[in-house]
Image 1: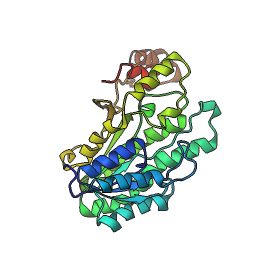
Image 2: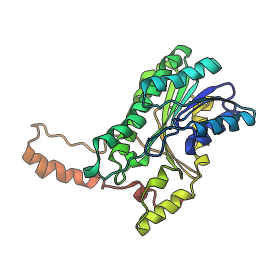
Image 3: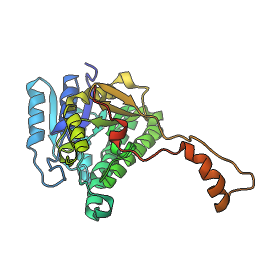
Length: 302
């Protein structure tokens, strides 16, 4: 069991991807804090029932788990997730930032509330939970973060400016954690998952293209994501940090980081005119066109 003796906290673990991660981590030997507010896909309400079911399933299989019903968007609630790990199991070895909601709107229709709520859960929530674990990781000289990002941010998608911005923010945060805490033996990586979930079920499917996309998503089950999470939390990945992975059914993809692709130098400096007449024409061959996630991952999942 690759996580034997470890203590792992999984946010948003009551349903979908988080549920599968919590159950697999327990099966692989970890004691698990199952966090889930139990809110709707839009972030409304609360229900500890789903998290209780996951804890019961883990315990009935002989594993160790405790429930935490806090909201990751609340700094005190986020800290309680880590405190529950330490108080119940004596330590914390891994954090999986999976909790999320969707409030999709086209950008010109995006309300301040929809923007703030999604940012609070995905980006601020990831920071709050990660920060709560950071000093424990530093003091013990080890620890692993697995954060969930999205190809909606890495590549693009319609009607998800709040979600895309938050998910790209998670990538930047993860990379900073990896750099800042490498000397303390702490790792931080991201996963962009493709899997059918109640969040994905909220995506409109009106056109034939949209219907085809949904059909593809329905063929990709949440349990396909969990093995990579468990592996990244394990000692086998002790040298893997600052990376972005993608899981699409039985396919694992490693994303390239943003790096310069071309540069131009002008010893006398640039003017608006020379940029327009020289720099922009030279750069055009290397400029990437706008794309959606489905344009890049346009093939059937394998």
